[in-house]
Image 1 (cartoon, rainbow, N blue to C red):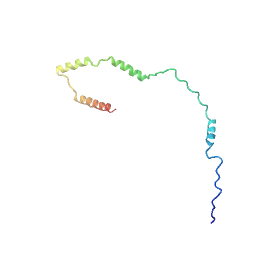
Image 2: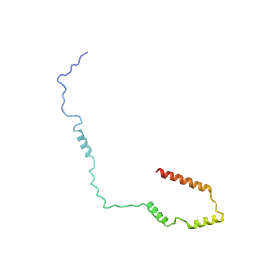
Image 3: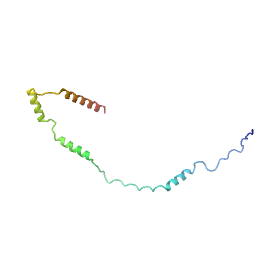
Image 4: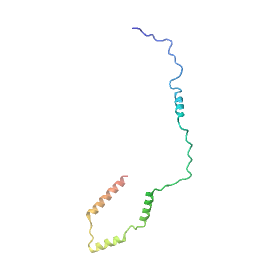
Length: 112
């Protein structure tokens, strides 16, 4: 078996360094096929608002509801007459359903 002698003159370092200059070459190649940069867009002249159809409907409904009184006098009179005559009946199931529904809604709103 032959022994390899270490070189005494050292290793020659010089010439181009790996990777140096390659990025500029890659950049120039990729720019050749690229489109020219777009002209800068001009700023809008002013603010504009586009209200959707749904938003308009909500606004209209809100306006209509503002005209409705909180207390429906006709309903109050009818119930008052039934109570006084002893014919007013309460549906316990509906009352319980509404109470539970309201409690659920309140707990959801409290968490958010």
